[in-house]
Length: 413
Image 1 (cartoon, one colour):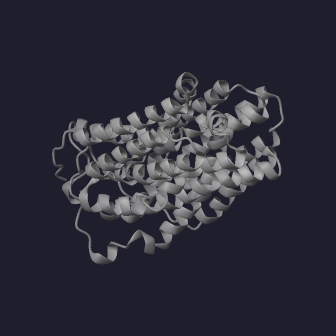
Image 2 (tube, one colour):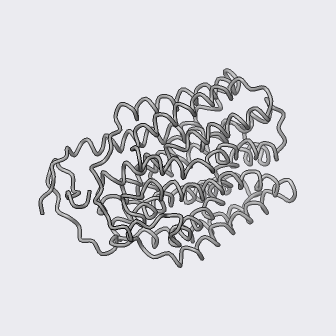
């Protein structure tokens, strides 16, 4: 089969640019919990209000993810990412100047609404540049952007807050997003044109029951993810008396290990020729891991912290599989809309879980709250049992490779 010569290195440039752009926004979307102790002290927040602040970015993403995905399908990824991240940087600059929790939440909601552009668009770019035999690991690498951003934020934000308050921390986050926008504008390129598909094949994601089941199951997995990564710093600092810097270091460690877990899960799925099956396996382990954290909430730190790290890494490891399955189920022509739709469902959990988790902690205990969060992935497993593997992933033969060229034949582009 004829393979069109496309420089091998440029696919990786696009992947690197998309990963950096996503990581720049993830410093906010995932890394903000590292600032939780400083935010509580500076703004005088209760635990419930802290949960609202931590969920504000997810709330902002909720109504815009699908529109950004549709826009990426129409205009390409480069402009969508650059415009959105620049706007998010401006909103975070405004957050740095706030003096009330109400204005802070408003600025973070706006940052989430604008920064959501990168979630669907950067994944769509990778989807177009890589073939099915390597898409799992490619999108797994792209999904490492989220723990990379989270780890960088967890390592840096507490120190920035100690040096210059939350104002300096938010200004640093703003600059990071603008750097991501600049790199995307300079390096991102649209993938080779996707094949023209017949109208019956272009099932809109919002009308496809498979997308609802996959997105719903994934959103339920986020319940555990948001509970663990969103509150590990506060839990260790407030409940177990660990210093804010040491607690943030635990979050950073979870994210660093999550990077390898996402790449490994993607590679595993490529070898299995499956996305849903390994996701279900990880989900079952996640239920057990969160349940163990619940039981060990008051155990010695030497026992508790490893359990938190293992459960946290499991909670981060499945996203790339869900992301890839959504894009492959919809097909290249609808991948932007599919990813935007799926990310919208995940954003519901990201926005709702933090304040709900904080409310449960306030009404009961940390142990009960973690136990309740384990129910999320458990219910998600029930939904994923009804989701078929994306068409062609399990049966497509591994294509031959020509050194220095893309493995995607013209007909598959």
